[in-house]
Image (tube, rainbow, N blue to C red):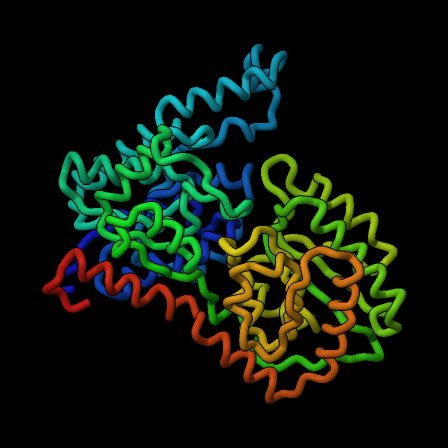
Length: 442
């Protein structure tokens, strides 16, 4: 732009929060800085993330040092595990306390867990704008209450805003249905916020099409901005398996899907090991976040993984961003297990596609991850969660790992190059900058 304008970026989950959305937030802020903006990120205190999804300090290494980060002292009280801090009501009637906690949040904004943050977020953006006037506010969801703060500054100070809506609000991306009606309290809030926004970003075409049908008068404001992958997450060399030692199948990501999906995967793995001698001497390693809050790594998922230990299944712990290339370099096949259907993509599918490794899809046949993987030369296509068919997929993936040529591995990387995160977010930031300042040079 012709001068350095100021962006207030409402990004709850910004690094070092160990959330998959942190990668998108980091690249978005970096792109604004690279394109001539001063950026102030508004997030919550690191101590809050320690009790939620945890922290990954290595994420900070890729944050442009010119970005200013403001951490608000907001916490999720429902995740507190120190019973010494509990009120008498919470200690004696925890379910009653939890219901009241959700209701009190809803009174401020129709989002039960985070609604109570509204006033603090609104105060924060007003104070930031007063000390250094902003030319744009960008709110990213979730939580959705960030949209209320952006809308308030627009209404009171005339600062335009955009929303990185990602998965949207009124659509249930897991179930594939409408999450709430247009005339509900949430529906009225959604309409109010979206119709005053400059631009609305969504992560895939099915979600964007849902919103264009829901709000035909706003159709031209909905833009698909896919997640993409960070190029520094891809291992440098091409991996070659050692069949004598057995193969290593790996799953990397946040594991919050229903336990039944993991159970089907493990049962299929055990069946495949009985069918195929190569798989019988192979391993399945799971890395990443398993659950959140107090039940992180203390849940049904972990029980299933531990019980499958005698069958070559292991949990390698959380995966700091800086370790991702090394982790991928030690695996022979990537297992892409995702819940949801046609409205769901994932963050990891892009990284998986870019590694040059075979990818075994474990999700519903009709799924947006298929859009990303179609044309990938080392892809074992999804077959749902039928155990016998999944076992066949494991065997096919093992055979593919052995047969894959260097040319095919390079072709897989070329296929994924279109989804590099900078290639997705750079043009989106440029287009949004021009909406704010049509005469600028961004």
